[in-house]
Amino acid sequence: MRIGELSKRTGVSPRSLRYYEEQGLLTSSRSDTGQRHYSAAAVQRVSLIQQLFDAGMSSRVIATVLPCVDAPGDLGVAEETFTAMMRQRDQIDADIAHLIETRDALDVLIRANSRHRAKLSMSPESAARSV
Image (cartoon, rainbow, N blue to C red; front, side, top):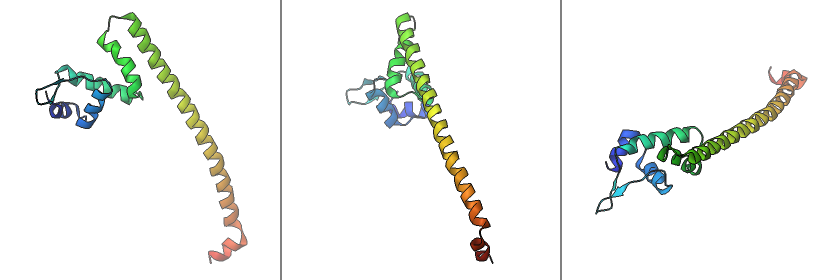
């Protein structure tokens, strides 16, 4: 199938499919006129790539995980894939911890602003302005 058909069947833009190919995540053959042609298995491959992106993996990490799909019986590849996925999970955990710290710091500022606004609303000047 050509790139447009793969795009329709997967819901992934042709631009993204070309990017996947540039990154070594997807392969195609070329016609004499240079058009890309994909096998029927490319639909499943693109679906898997999308799942991996949805799991927060970068194309670089995905490239290290896909060999496990291509060589499912290779324990060494399976171990490398496991390590890559665990490294990715650890990074997500670190990102979550950082976001929680950032949110907590913002909460401190919000509370300070709330106290400040409360003081301003109780001042004689603000009472005079509201009349």
